Image (cartoon, rainbow, N blue to C red; front, side, top):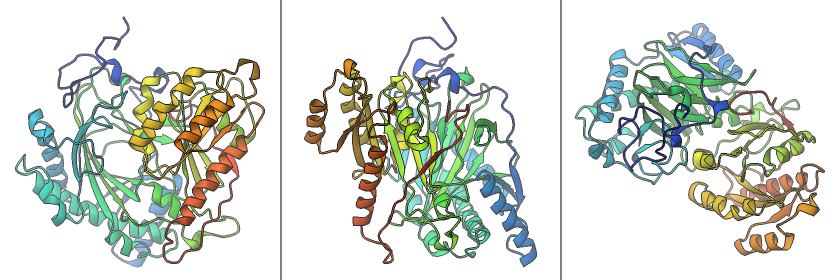
Length: 514
């Protein structure tokens, strides 16, 4: 029996493998071999920015603003020191978090909820034990701004939690406002460009606990993701954070420096900057001997606000795309999702195209970010995608016309969409490999009748001979555009226009493309 191959595919609700004292990683936590972390990853080349003087003379401030802009442009990530939050406040937040996670399970379970919109929520993995692959973490999430409105709903135990975490939340929000001011200034938009909207915006504090893992190369604390926010500030007790180096698509460890805070550029800033600043892709790895606490403070606009590309950053060389479309292609492995995406973006086809497990990034005319999910033969990884469903504008469900089971499983994928995606997300059913007429087992009429019955459009495609591939993507884009155009306009904005031309990001080895 190989390491980690012991049985035990699930854990009781509210109880993790760590709580059970297991000396191995159960199968439900194991990730594919090709995506397992390294025990000795190379360190990331991270900018360390001293914020002393950010509020000082114009010369000193301009130098710091430039450094922040350079870091946002390079990889969307940097560390800051002399940020104005006392070490005692940082230590207090970390210690109160550890105290909370050390309490009896019954106390923590009081805050367990499957409702992702609950203002205070305790859970495990990504979806409180519902994920078919689990992640080696427990977490506590709560809203934090305005503090006086939300702090009363935070845990009363341990007794110091509200005070210590509240002090950190206040300091983190002040810092976020200062950094956001520097980011918009570095873009040439002025230091107060987003200030009114950020004043009324949201702050969500996610307190993560990653207990020691007996076999840390077999599991992850969190999967690769970017943050659907403007800015995220991370305080960590030890190393474990890794970022994706987009130059060679390898994972690099973020060095731990006491007192430093990690700053992540989120998806909203990539939109605002017209693609000039990049939203960083990151993940959480594990340690065999130490518990890691990571406190993420996410800052964004209000729920009813839309982030748009700043008109000042649009010119002939950098034309404006009206929206950042987040599109998912989902379905069983082997149905041709990767081939469809490659055919659309690069008008090419490879018989030996490697299935992916993770997220493929394709920049559509620089303004459109498309995600694809491929379970690569590991159906137990299906609900790993829950965090990616949220915020998706459109979802293409793909099956193989020569594979009856892949068509039968469409219902399960639709259930996933209903569970995780927004209510008004656009959907399109696609039957791929229609060129294989002699091997067809799912007729056009059968699939069309099914799609009509649930009220979603249907189309058959062939990535091999390019049949209807462009039409499928363009149809989805048009549907999304029409839905967005029909929504109430913000500030009398003109209806959106959509131009789509694709060029794929280099498909090199790494978690997101191998």
